[in-house]
Length: 391
Image 1 (cartoon, rainbow, N blue to C red):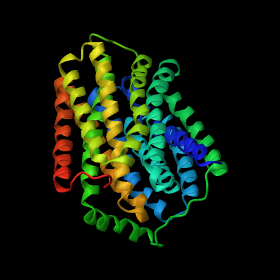
Image 2 (tube, rainbow, N blue to C red):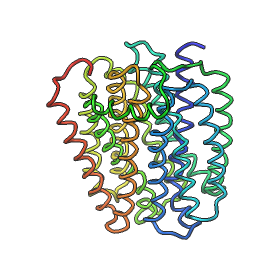
Image 3 (cartoon, rainbow, N blue to C red):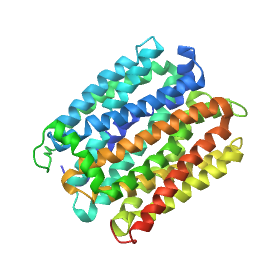
Image 4 (cartoon, rainbow, N blue to C red):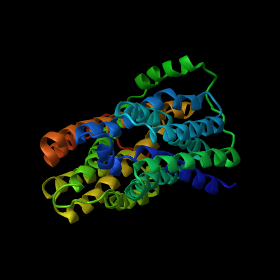
């Protein structure tokens, strides 16, 4: 298979896998009714899924620098399939929360696939290839919200997870049949040495730390929005159903379209230029939606700007970090994505509590607080190093 065809398959696989993290967002109101809990409690589902994902990134993704990647990807797809089926049948809320944490932990296939794609690409095309794969990831996020909303309204939220489990089995077959054998570049290490090596990488790469904090804070604002949007659209003046709420995910298609563009820009100039633009877009989105959340047009424009900004920042940050340590891309990606999803879990958790106590104003203040972290960290990065073609 040609590189372009393989990258396309990787993009689809990445999108199908990451969708498992986002099926719950339009379904939160339905889940709350099933388990007889309130918004603050059901918001923990999203938070624990993201914490689980961060945990899986820490425990599983470094294995891509130790094991053959094709086998690792197939095994993770299989574990995800099993966990999805378990989530769909649990009757107790406490067990349901634990299963969602486990689901997040095993759904780390995208962050194994992305470094493989980066390894396959020539240096001059790495940003473009990563951008294409990440476009698939974002399309998976958008499709997850739409599909889960529609299926949840028609067949119940449990059916969403059952169908997703079947889809993961299909991707086990696709990976085994199509993906190339991909062995790590780094010298052989034990698993313990591999995890221990994350510390020296963090200490020796200050730009990785800054990129991680900036990305995590931006994703925190994104998660704060999408976790609580279900509650906002279920109340006055909207009163929308889960299927209608899921359709709002399609507004983020602009974010998917910007990924290859952001990747090409990162190939040609300092990625921090694009990150600056991303922060501005996210800031404008929240400042618009704060006072005007009862106006549908303001939410639509805000969603487009928010998704554009977060996606552009993500692609630029990943292109930036992959240039740091070619011999340890999986571990560099682990540091970045663990921080990224911890930021997301913080955004989801605090925003759910903020909604319960202060509704949309509380959610917005949560997002703006996280955004201030991104701004301060990014300014520190700009001051430390001059702008250049590549970091």
